Image (cartoon, rainbow, N blue to C red; front, top):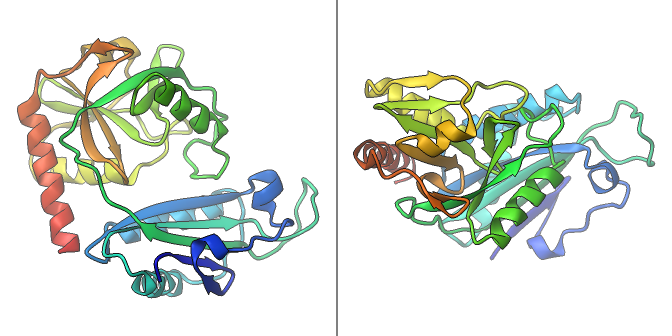
Length: 278
């Protein structure tokens, strides 16, 4: 199959998927999701994504009775159906199917999976960012499908010729529209704390593990927009970008002061990726 679509047991090409109008994802955005990337038909950090998927479902009280091992096997079986070697695996769980009413009854979640060809870009190519006020509600640590603020932030970046949005609440940096944001300063990796303002990014988690394995200081603390602008490097980290440096914020040059450490982190990340996907 060129693409693989799945909805509650039915398998077809993605553009043939049919989602019921009464799926609560349609009229409430009442659901959660996750995304993994496959290279050479092998999913990178798949178990981390599955864990976050189940954690997100539990956090907003969506019932999903499929055991983790069974769900993992389902994903792998669908990956095997796709003709591509490199692909994006998107999986979503809505609260279920029912009449439009804010309150919900106990129901089984509705599972949607889409697998499409995907080619990872070059993480060595530096990115341009545009600042954007973070106006999201306080469930940012849950990977829900309520993404209007992120959509607006990503669009803002795009119309300004940038690759991502640097989001901030007042003076304090949170993350990007759909990526984690880290700094390099004085030989250290600096990351915002994982709280209700921040999604626990899988790529960020891998970076933290790499740092621990290679004696690179990893510091968790809040930092301001100005600190980011003054950092040795700004790193954008995500499942679809890996870890990329930044050359501009709002049209002004940034970074370029510790490309040695940035390159080392990228090399170590690539080695981890190769080990798990070759």
